Image (cartoon, rainbow, N blue to C red; front, side, top):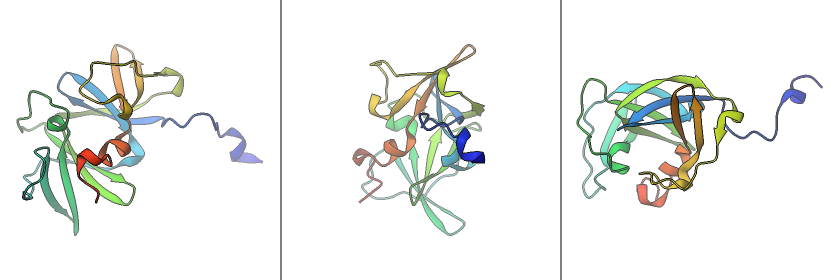
Length: 158
């Protein structure tokens, strides 16, 4: 009885998303995966890393790889400025930093507002897109950030 009855089993979609910009597009990721948002700092480079793996930072004793999602998705602009941020994420047992152009806000997106992603001509493989949400005038692309960052081409797992 009690709390469990209200649990809607069918919805595996998160309700709250952190939204951020990459180029002209706005993306959303499950807020529960977000540990913190930090200003960009230059990481320590790693030899022979793919170009989008900027290096590592030491975050309170944890070595955190920093991935520039803009480079990973082939965005044109990837200069670092005052708005550039790293989103520090908990992915499984790992902590990974993702560089984005800017963070927009945290928004609640009900599951019924989410549409399946069409086969887009998007910079991102559709496998990593949970769906599209229309929020007022904004179209937010909901990312499955976990499978994206743990995918083999990211080179973050052995």
